[in-house]
Image 1 (cartoon, one colour):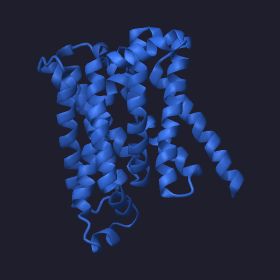
Image 2 (image 1 turned 120 degrees about the horizontal axis):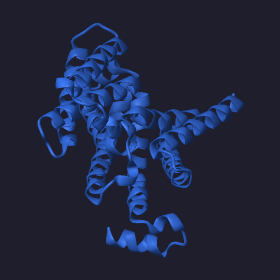
Image 3 (image 1 turned 135 degrees about the vertical axis):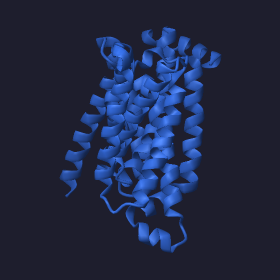
Image 4 (image 1 turned 45 degrees about the vertical axis):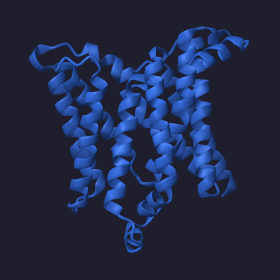
Length: 279
């Protein structure tokens, strides 16, 4: 971290002379490829609503952690979200209900349970507002280190299982006929989403987290010509939106997560127009 701080001090950029902005920029540089890669897998696997449901389950985990008096309720949220993801995968593999129906069931149950626990005994809900909105400007060096480890894990997972997940999402029957354990692959993937969603909630906020997990991949899909471009462009879109959104947040005094999400929405609109222009 000291090398990063020294590098930022050398740059003639006023906002990078503040320690909290140095941490925020580094967090963005780590989260951008994290969101970019996860987004392509989520969009291809048609799991956009599931990532939103996981955010709700993470909030329930945070509420449980706070009730239990944990100093770091995020870890309780990680555990609860992983259990939630695995339970969803189990029910999905043994039900003839549509995936969006099951996601609605799990999501509504998670929201209700989270609000119930958070307000149990007449407790105030306001202390949970920071998890709803998020604040990347308060990210610590320790949290950045954890995000970096998660990024390494996601990259390794993507390299080893990216093609299998794509085939599983596009044609699960064909994937199964080729010896790919479809159920296991989907369970690992949902667990990875759960971990990413939970650990990034304090930084970007629950209310807009799903947009950061969907928009980079959706935008890249509008303009990419092949699978490799799809992944690379998604990461680039996430990185560009992260930097521009953080700058807008600093100079306009707005929420960083919301600014990043809005920039991604603009990128999607532009990419959609370019797609329509080619056809």
